[in-house]
Image (tube, rainbow, N blue to C red; front, side, top):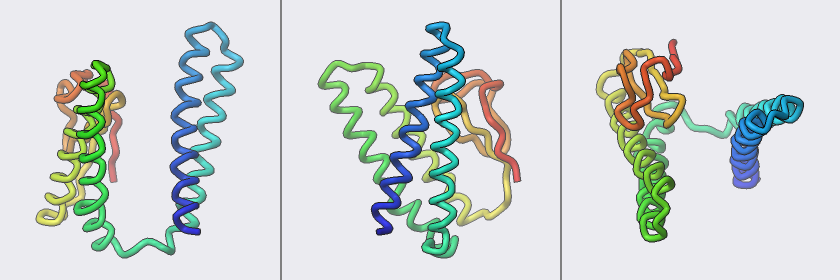
Length: 160
């Protein structure tokens, strides 16, 4: 049952992302009624996914074990997947996907370093996430994203 719920959560988040993209396209097509609907649909799917995540919280381990799982299993799996997709995209001459996968693999490597740094230095920090590529910067946002070159104003603050 737990595996099915996790797949459902992943599908809800994936559909929320697709609905967000549909909304952007509807805006471009000058269809504001559809853009607003797709934005609402995206938010609905996010809320549903969060609800299932909250309901499954009791099945999660303590933070120390969750940190080890993220650092030793989950983030390396993302890195391997992005690296493999990068190579596949290059072979297909799909440069945009190859670039995105290369960027994401780099971001996940940096995220793994950040989580390992927290084990040695558990100070509570602010983080800043690039809206475009997802790069995470601790403490202060950079003037421009080192991954995608987005300006400082494109960073979202995540504060305690």
